[in-house]
Structure formats: C-alpha cells, structure tokens
Amino acid sequence: MNKNTMYLIVAVLIVVIVVGVAGYMFLGNNAGTDTNPTATPGPDTVVGATTVQFSVNETTIATGDLVGYSFACKDYDTGTEVVRVDICIADQTYSYILDAGLQESWVSLDNGATWMAGVFADDWVAYGSLFNDFVGRLADQGNTMDLSYTTDTTSITIYCVAVNETIADSMFATS
Image (cartoon, rainbow, N blue to C red):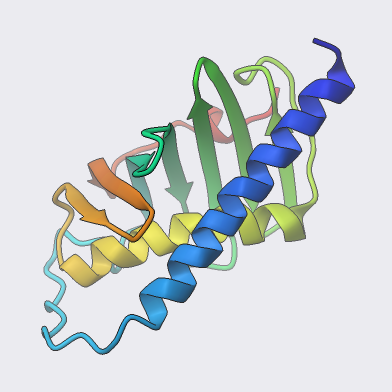
C-alpha cells in the first residue's frame, strides 16, 4: 500500500470519527435535561488532576466495529497541556501528540516508528475535544472508576483510569 493511499484511508477514518463524535455531542446535548444531580467530585477525581491516563473502547452498535483509544495527558487543564492519543483500528495504530502550549501536533501512521508534523487546529478539534469529552464524562461521574454508556449509535467503555500518576516524558516524544 503506497503512502498516498494510507493518507487517504487515515483521512477517511478521521472524518468518520469526527462526524460520529459531533453527532454524539449533538444528540447528547439535545437529549433533554438531566434530572440527576451532578456528583461532587472527591479527591480521586479527574478534577484538579495534573496527569490523566485512560483507555476507551468505542463499538458501533449497528456493525460491531471497534475503535480503541489510549489517552495520556500531562499538565492537564492548563495552557501547556500535552495529550497523546493512540487509536487502534483493526490491526493498525495511529498516534497523535497534541501540545497546547506550543500549538503544535504530530502524527504517526506506523505505530510510533516515525512522526510527522500535524495541523494542530484540526487535530485539537478532533482529538483534544474527544479527550476532553471523555474526561468530562468521568468528572460528571465524580470519580475515576470505569464507566460504560451507550449513545444512539455507539457503546463506549472508559477503563484503566489513572490520575496524578507519573507519565514518562518519552510518552510525548516524537524521536
């Protein structure tokens, strides 16, 4: 498979993921009011954390297609936040590193073997917002326990949540 074909496949996958997340956000925000009070975050929540790590399985209900995500973030909820997301689709892993302080991003299409500059504004909208949506779900829950929920189109499980753990700088390195 040549490089241009790989880029085209990744671009199509990104569009599908972004459209799915946007649809989920639209449907989730317009689904009516929540009559359950929001839990008060305790000391082990993502609120106030400096580092956050977790994994997500997102399964399309209609087809059973699975997308796996692994997120890691240091300097969480600051102007210098750095997020890494590894996306596993079938047997391929795509990785993104988003540096909010530098306003730069990098992408790897070969399991992290090589990295190239990304388009930060686009990558932040796609993956920074996805990361923050999942963290928001955890914060709404009020703890860092595993979380599962279903939308109209997907079944989502957030698991292996770790806050304020040491994350090696190599996790965010591109060389």
